[in-house]
Image (cartoon, rainbow, N blue to C red; front, side, top):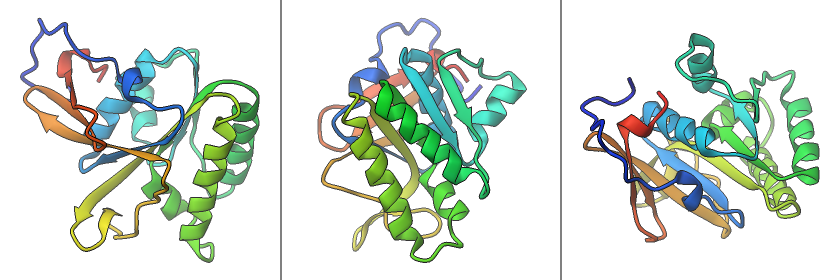
Length: 204
């Protein structure tokens, strides 16, 4: 189990889909990969639209392969390599421009690592994010980008452990994942109110 000491009688919890914006880039910030895995597994299980999941750290894929998470018919799971990432991004752009989808990039840290050989990798990653963000507006789709990050007083949010600046735009909605007692606290940093996910509601 991802989280222990969970309350099996917990029934009152918010649906994650209620905190996801179709008008903004949903930037998921976390310090522990297991927080991210629990959050995304819960989100995927609740989502009815087609999900285009780019798994760059292979954690989610590992859970599906092991049987810890059941695959879903509405989920297309991509496991890109340096040789396939361009074709995968093109395929996702086409699908997102013709139908309503949820795009998950897991994680931006992995995208930086995969594209590290490119010149000005920061600008390349930012361009990919902005292009995807502009495409989804046409079909009322959503995009979610997971980032292992930490807050530095002098610099704001930076990726961990590389220290690269977080890809941010004026159209970003930051959502911080934190451990709570027996579950996950989902904290939108725009002060719209925290929600709590009891461990019993998380598929892992």
